[in-house]
Image (cartoon, rainbow, N blue to C red; front, side, top):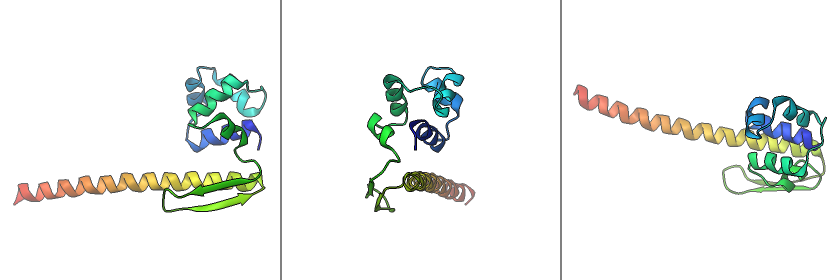
Length: 129
């Protein structure tokens, strides 16, 4: 996977538009879209800024999806090791990881909603009793 493809993947995984990403980088949308299309070479300072927006190190951005990945997730319910030499495998693994993280966030929000609704129901029962 080329750097511009990685940048696009990471932006899409965060559900950011090109307009939002360009604004975060203080650049025009057309200038940013050229980066994603691989029509312009990313200068190191701009690549560092992009990596920062994705909350990752520059080297992680540059090597994301490359050969010999090792992922060891132990911080949640979905853990495991993946070792591979296929960029497609790394891409799919990252995509699945992001889907699972989003699922966990959604479940947390739903649990908070349930707790608030339970509190409201208890209050309603007291008021109507």
